[in-house]
Length: 102
Image 1 (tube, one colour):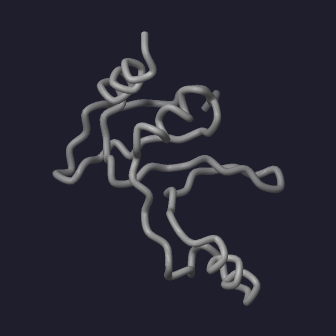
Image 2: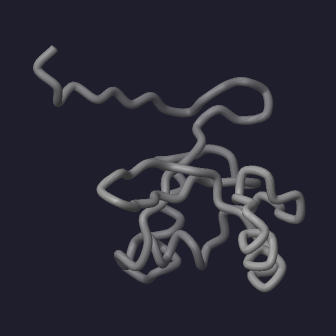
């Protein structure tokens, strides 16, 4: 199976928004998910030096889900998710997390 075949299989199973995707983060023993953004790092670092955060950084745009991002995920280079609710408020799949005792 080629990488392109793997990407197409992933997209057929986990179909969702393509204009944005969540990226997993870990910091100081905490972890979570945040939308992936595109921005100029020099501009962001200057903003951060003035006490700003990514939340209040105005010069960012949502990063689209690309085949390159998906391939990096499938190769274990980064951990991404999918936003399953598409523009018409429908979804192609549902998932549930039952690993907690309560």
